Image 1: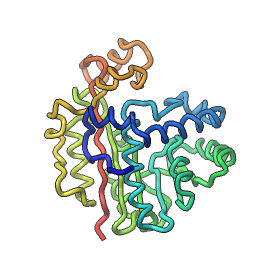
Image 2 (image 1 turned 30 degrees about the horizontal axis):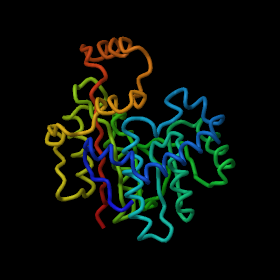
Image 3 (image 1 turned 120 degrees about the vertical axis):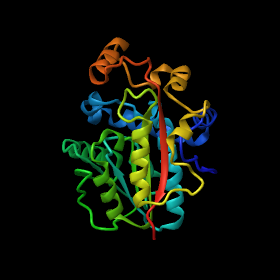
Image 4 (image 1 turned 30 degrees about the vertical axis):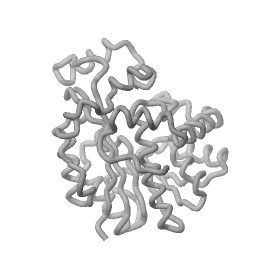
Length: 279
């Protein structure tokens, strides 16, 4: 990837350019083959979420974003140790491992049932991606174990991210990279709205260094009319959105939890951030 994908919220034209790029086609080809080869192992897990995470609206940007940062790490470390925090089961750690077989890839998730799935996929892929069932608030790794941690769309679904961030700080090496992405609800009907997102960013900034030129005030980002959102994704391809049941069911559930039906589809965007642990 010649140029890093920029931190912050992707713009519509950047998103469209990315999904028409060679790097996206490379990632997509690997993902499609991974699903074809391993679908029998992940079918039950996929029923809880989705079978094909790459073809979800935000993940089409998030995975290449993380990969672009990963390429930076690989240039400076002979055998970097990488953690996928809150990994679930996806093609992505196997893609990294295939691209650079010198990389030491670890995955962790609270779901113990994933252990068997990783064992099966490792055999099928002839790979050695290591999985541990773990609570992100108390990780079973030694201090300063990793050169890079990435956490894709996890923190917005937690209620105790201060402890998680402290754990990331503990297990990351000085000068190491933390890559965080999270969705933002633009109408305040989903997991994290703009104000809550700002609180999360403040917690991250307390421990880690961000780009000096990047504003961490989400209000300034979401005010840009050209940002990529679920509405953009719906215009590109409605199947990129995760909501498969009739809209009224989701809107009713939203009303029960928030007192508002909200618009449809729910307007969301995604924020991506690369941070560094001070050396």
